[in-house]
Length: 178
Image 1 (cartoon, rainbow, N blue to C red):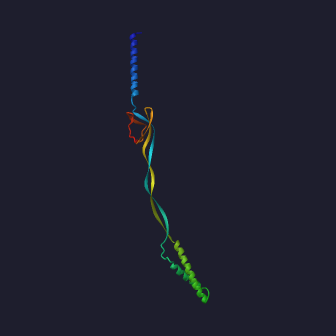
Image 2 (cartoon, rainbow, N blue to C red; image 1 turned 120 degrees about the vertical axis):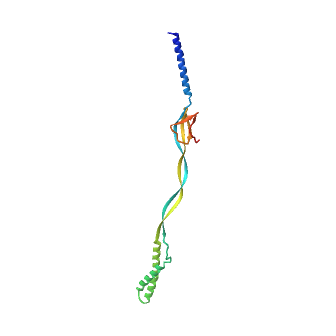
Image 3 (cartoon, rainbow, N blue to C red; image 1 turned 60 degrees about the horizontal axis):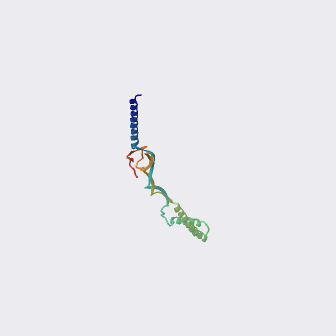
């Protein structure tokens, strides 16, 4: 075989190998442009908000009594009792029966009027309001686990990340809250 052909092939092979290894070395030396997001979890903060809570309550109360001493019931009972007592007996017994009937009727009339007044109630609705604390949550950031240069890293970000996060000079290009 021709020595110059062999020499050309050897030199060409060496050149191709050298160029290939330099190209591969520059690819390996290149810094990554993105970090791969492995996991992202929202971080919440709880806070209280005052809220007015109102309910309607049914209230029953006795109506205002106009005849506090039950005079009408006493008088009406005494008259009816006196009339009935007058129907009993004769002579002086009739007078005693009339007086006793009037006394018993007056007492009974007063008791009847008292019971009626106690049962006489009015129903109203009253609105009752109070301030209560309602607990709410808001997202304050995201705990993110990402893969960069074959290593797992963790950080907290302001916003939820996409599947990949841009990287420059080994640093994430996104706002971090840490």
